[in-house]
Image (cartoon, rainbow, N blue to C red; front, side):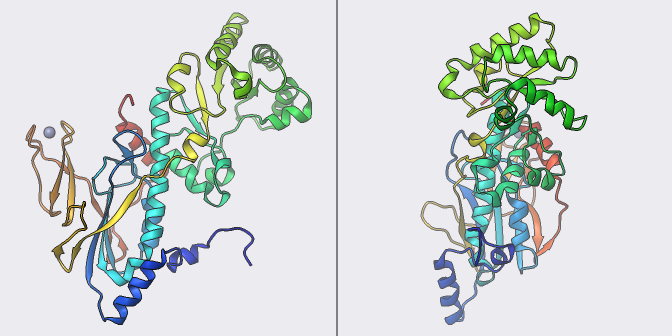
Length: 386
Ligand SMILES: [Zn+2]
């Protein structure tokens, strides 16, 4: 009897997380003595928001396919893709991998949705750190995956122990309302935090629990003079009115009293749409639901070749394709066939193939970068504005 409504790694690897029609298809092909060599491509017709996404979830997808007789080409994790562009291609005998389609898409769709939304928040924050606080909005079994996708998408930090462990990063946190409520006020909670928690952890006072943000911020700044990194405003929406005005008032008073180096950290139900206005006064953001509960990218995994012959359902282009991007002018092109080189039609520069081999006959043929390396790659390629 399972205590939690989750599957084990072993059940995923055995293909138990499959829509039943794939399992039935496998049985029918087996009964008919058929096992064609099939090529499938994953692509998304549209995106939850905007016209680009951050590809994520590949490393888990590779774990599922490793050791099976299949070839996998894909965009490296963190690559920006557009609707209609292939992000992953699998070739092999269909009966070997058809029951994994549900799980494969699950890995890619949710992680890419979260990474894309994290990247959008990072762009909206215009250089201010965005910390992921959304683990509490998802099933705990997937918290590490969610935090990794948020981090890869550009977040500066994650909040849970397990997320930090997966990423090899120290988790980030401030002070919860619970500690303020139990110790009686913001100042007592901040002092206790400073006494007990090891040096090196930034002191961030939470200044909205009982009193006014401005007066609590000043009180905490005075108590911990020289040793307070930031004040966090997590003001409840029902009391918030104009969060920008409240934060500006806090900034003004802190500056006036000589605490201009104390930063302002904003959290509490923020979305990418809130940030442009708040950037005037915020130094950093904690963002939860807007990232962790991001809409999934609707990747589909479609057959494009059967036994070497191009074939596809209505609405999909048949044949194995390569995506090319010009490193000089950014021109993007899709071509049938995956070999050779292509010159940019706009500037004649040699274009770079984007789908790269990852598995050959189930063997990993490429080193996988660390989450931090992927994040820096993503950050270096994000557009400057949404
Ligand atoms: Zn070009």
